Amino acid sequence: MDAEKKLMLVKRNTCDIVTEEELLKLLKKKNPSVYLGTAITGRPHIAYFVWVLKLADFLKAGFKVKLLLADIHGALDNTPWDVLEYRYQYYNKIIPLMFKSIDIDIKNFEIVKGSSFQLKKEYILDVLKMSTFASVNDCKRAASEVVKFGDNPKLSGLIYPIMQSLDEVYLEVDMQYGGIDQRKILMFARENLPKLNHAPRVEIMTPLISGLAEGGKMSSSIEGSKIDLLDNEKTVVNKIRSAYCKEGEVENNGILAFLKYVVMVIKEDKKKKFIVKRDKKFGGDVIFNNYEEIEKAFVKKELHPSDLKNALAEEINELLKPIRKESKVLQNISEKAYKNL
Image (cartoon, rainbow, N blue to C red; front, side, top):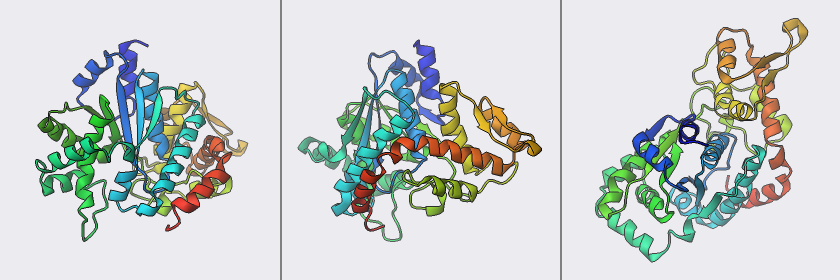
């Protein structure tokens, strides 16, 4: 794959890159590396496929990809300490199955447990050093869209962005990837790492997708907004059928968002078409080659929400098949990991 194709793949479905010039230089490097960190808080849901697909893009572009399962960060964001290990086990089991669902080779993919390096002397010393440069306001502003501060904020939330910044260094990566809600933390890292004589990294971000309920993102903390990775076929169908999807409207439409950033990415990569099955009296089946065709038909009201929902539910159930094969094991871990929820 040449540099131009790599760049197109890395930029696909991103909404911000800091900076693209640095990214171009990085793509010329042999075996560049990137990481995504996810705090092991709520149960993974189908929106996680957005970043699984983005990590797949990095793998295809020749990156060494690291996934940080941030157990310490989870505790800093109010996850009970006594369930951290079980939540780590749950994520560690289910994420590789998500890659299996999309048929991606993960030989250059590595899962790293946060506490495996974040408790070492050198790391802790750098955390303390950065805390002497960063103000309370700096840290609170950086973490405001990620950490649940509440009415009586805990000190732990202020440590969160300091640690996330240093993770780039101690994971020995060239680039960090995150959702756009992470932007303030990523900019905090670029600003503060040089103060400890560490080089700033490239920061790359993708959008958050709308939830299934009206307004807001898909979130593990908002029950009606998501489909859990362990939901059975009937539950998936019922949740999709009850999802907000106003005829002709694209904005805040979680059905269209999931199609754009997940289903149609998979379809196009596999050179497959998206088929909406309809009764002959309603025009019969309709076939789409890409997301743009779907959106255009939906806006023109040539594609009814109920038909679109039925087709999407079928796609999601197909996507979840490899995960459901391990559902008993996953459910056993989940019962311990999320016993308080």
